[in-house]
Length: 272
Image (tube, rainbow, N blue to C red; front, side, top):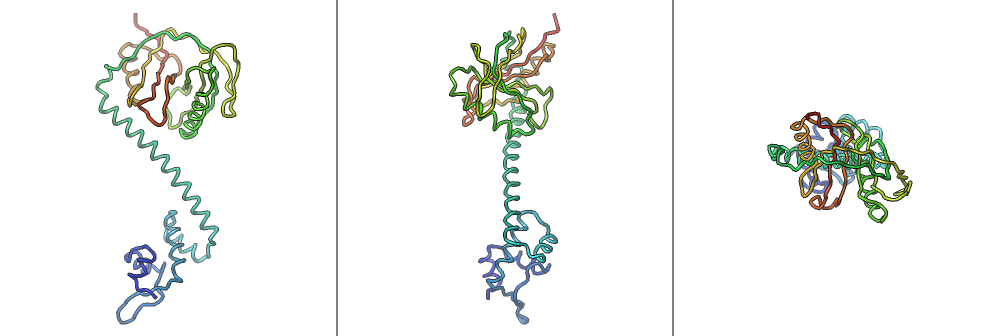
């Protein structure tokens, strides 16, 4: 048998936790010396403690753990619970990464927000052009970025394709991308192309006599660029007349400082 300190090291838990589990009757020592009060544990108790720790780590309450232990949960059921918890944690990590990027973006917006008037927003005419595109509604940014990266990477190897672009058809910002069209500018008469088992179909983008545009480069974030366009639109008393576009002159997911993207917002200047 092992004294509580020895058993805590073997089980890789604290003495405090073992004492607490004893007090609530969840995991009690094999024997307790009546004179010294020392708690003693056996190695045969280790599997039960490990089950308790597993169920604690997947978020079960102490009462739920007691119920599971009394019902003699199988090893396969525990593995299933662990796989479920693993998937939850992986999703949480992905969500945390997205949240971190949002925080970084907002921080840059605060630090540079008073410089919006200095950003180079250009009003220009963008003639109608044919594109090969695929349009879908995305419920999560994870799904959107997965398609975006796949399409962009595979399209890089197609010599007949021009710059990659996205058109954001959802009129307002949501917690998900929503209705997005992705594709490439194309020349010639090609009517469709299949990329990553997805068909991209030709359509003609309309002429826009007035587009408020800004180039994002180095580490300037998307939010700040859009803030600058919004500032320009407000100062110039312009109206937004269509969906935003993003034209990728260069995209490097491994190094954001190498990415060059042009944001295009169709507008109408209402003042004379």
